[in-house]
Length: 77
Image (cartoon, rainbow, N blue to C red; front, side, top):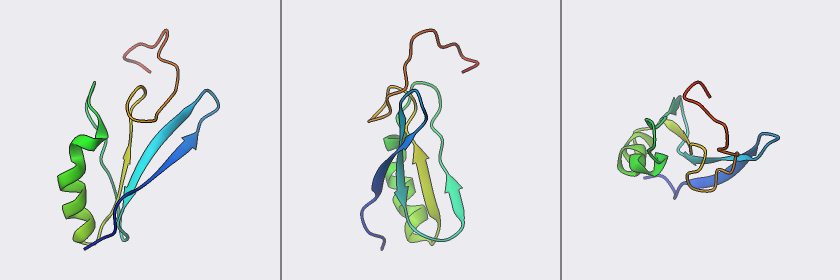
């Protein structure tokens, strides 16, 4: 069983993107669909981490501690 997930902020210039990380091994990125938080993946991220994968989950803008400005964004962003 893996330790609790770690959280960090990736600075992007106009703000930061929170990254939730768990496990070691081959990389698996879980990206949530529109208007969803990556914490929706908690249970499956734990299972993948326990199975030997390195799971990374970026929080979308406006979710968790991600802080990039939302003004003027379109679906293309």
